[in-house]
Length: 178
Image 1 (cartoon, rainbow, N blue to C red):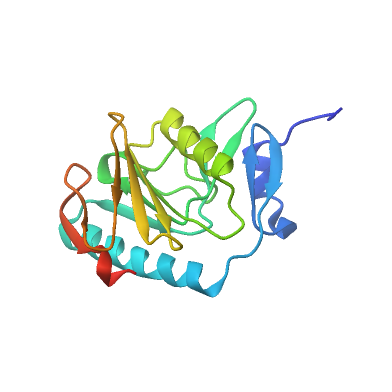
Image 2: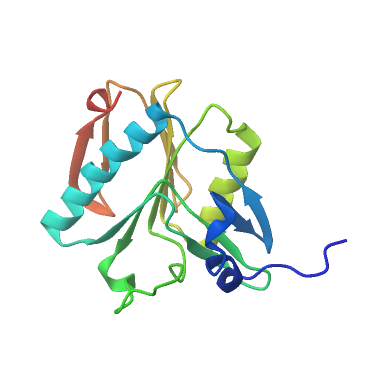
């Protein structure tokens, strides 16, 4: 039996834990990612960051940025890439984890990811109020878009990635990623 659950504040004050997330007060460690995984993240960060900055839409956040998705017990998740619209960006930004979900969470799958874990993570993002989740699968060269209204769209390399509601004007051919 666990004596006590960890809080988001306690997690933030323990920088030596390595890659991990906090799920309902329990630390879940995560393995390091491979080179291909990291490369996809950099491309997606550049695409999103450039578009968001050019159109003054909000802020993008890189991998390892913690977002508080729940309290008592606390849940802190860290997507590979995230975007928050201007209206939701606190001023000043907190030194600790972001208070709430991003509007867009991007997860790049690793070979060690299990389908059940990805499904649970996607549902968690949605339940916390994330408006859109992109699941990038390097193995199948697809991106699956999960939108707040419930639609799920799978894109292949011949398709164009866009998010008209969150990122007006954003259009990138998936062939440029894969």
